[in-house]
Image (cartoon, rainbow, N blue to C red; front, side):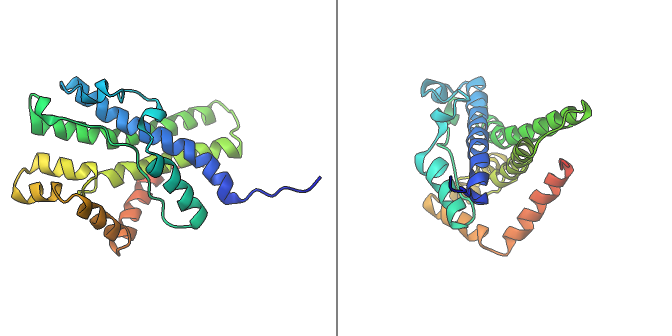
Length: 213
């Protein structure tokens, strides 16, 4: 029988893709839930008020791009279908929209903390965690810390740009919101700029707070 070799990249993708989909689904669910609580039932009517990843998956952003990133070695870029929010249905449009926008990144931070605490409880209980589960715990924490920081960047279409406008509504932040495709271009420029290593230093610093051994 031939000795079948499975590449480390393929194994990492096998670990990472479920973490990726679940983390994005929790992020979008948090947006939908808070929007619903504040009076906007748009996401609820579209079936997006759910943790079911199938409802949030974008074929290109959630499947194709992550797979291409792992197979090509390029930086990971991916996304879920954004939850539609109609801030006109909110009683306090700016404040409520800021909270709804922040709910997504916050959910990722809370997920990272929850996974960290679960790991620590398992360790305190004397249960030995094999390499597979250790990698799942570690990847979940790091990726969700990354999502928390990344989505708070004030660059459209990220949540941070919505929060920036909601906190400081003026002609400049309004123009930033209307950048459309140019906002995505700005995001790519940022990712490949000298500022990116500084951003990743912040991500690594926060990840080290929840470091597991």
